Amino acid sequence: MPPLVPMQTGSQHHATPAILGVPQPHGAVRCVACAHRCLIRPGRQGICHVRENREGELVSLVFGEAVSAGADPIEKKPLFHVYPGTVAFSIATRGCNYHCLHCQNWSISQCERDRLDVPAMDLPPARVVAEALAARASCVAYTYTEPTVFIEYVVETARLARVAGLANVLVTNGYQTPEALEVLAPLIDAANVDLKSFDDGFYRRVCGARLKPVLDTLVGMRRRGLWVEVTTLLIPGLNDAPEQLTAMARWLVAELGPETPWHVSRFFPTYRLTDVPATPAAAIRRAVEIGRSAGLVHVYSGNLAGDDEDTLCAGCGEILIRRRGFSALRTAALSGGACARCGRVLAGIGLGLPVSAVSSEADA
Image (tube, rainbow, N blue to C red):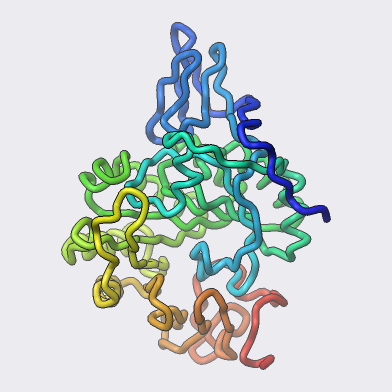
């Protein structure tokens, strides 16, 4: 298959009709894709800068225009309970509905806000699926930037991916509306949602958003049958207070269930938050213990090689999947998606199927 070729910088912005736009008086449009519910007047854009009102019609400026595309280990998303050890073909467009001070992918997510030119690739949905199949991927991942702002691209690609036998996963900030979830839920199999803090003030100051819509999305995803994993990036002095982490973990247990994976990751100074030190390893380990004490069974440390990466049986504690970095090794104790020792089924997707890409101690 020919390599992906970047488009000329600045050649983007050919508009495609968008979904989830509600006409308003005087030619305005209410975008209901994300919880900002932007009222966009003619000639203006939403907070994401990639959804625009053109003569009373909501359009997407990024359909089929990927700024990043390639095969990743699915553990990198991170998704530990979804086809472990396989490849996720990952795509992203520019734009985001947050403006986090600590954004890891600011060069593509904030490029419109920061007036940066970012080359894009002409990558229509059918080509995404073809690339994913060529990479022997288990799924297509909509990631790196916020998939909600390119929901039309997600939906069309996900439909084709499903026909081709591929799963679809979101890596998202969780700021969708119920209207968007109704569109996405029939097509998406799993999501990793960033729960950035359990404090609304943090969301407002650091991200330009609010907490409640994210909590509503998490509950809405679970009720609609999506497999959900949660990631929290711990930032020293901003969202790492033990009482806040305890409240978050207890909420996850109560609302999503004790077998919901929680990934607790280290922060490193970046973008507009360079005056805060990196998260100490001890803080990550403390958060992992807080999660377990609150009743979460699967708590993982991120950006901390060698610590708390293995998946254990929720029943007897037997190691079912060993991990080092982004590699996964299914042990002989995981048989048919369940623990061979006690029979407890491991929660997740694609854990009992004979996926050839997953290594096994039994095969070693």
